[in-house]
Image (cartoon, rainbow, N blue to C red; front, side):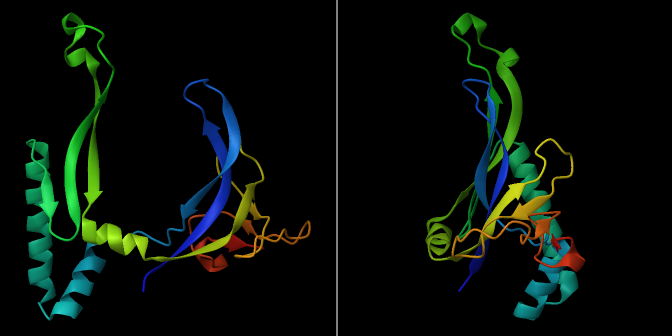
Length: 180
């Protein structure tokens, strides 16, 4: 079964209605790395016994076709995975006379998971790694200190927390995660 590690970390929160900025704790999944196309090709090739060159060519063709369809106004539904589509961000025109291209701000790529993928997400094991306080919310490169222990929520004694350079990175000092 799949397992996702979560962290709750302090960050600045911008409140849109009031324009106020406050700090708060946000929970998010730990992201260990970015899987590249070559990694996907290797995995599919090993698991399907299809030569890497064929998988690579197919992946390139699939991504080019998806890009072409999306950029020409189509949605793309991948069975048992989900649907990709585009949406617009823009302003609201109060009258028809004010409606037009001036409203447009930018396009967004959306993904809506399939029912089967949603069910799998509902069954993922989740584990909390801890709660992390930001030592300086104004710094460009944030440094975090763990203030609760893993899973039990117990506060750590002052000075016993681990500092984190990249809270979304792996929990390994050699990989840019925890530094003590």
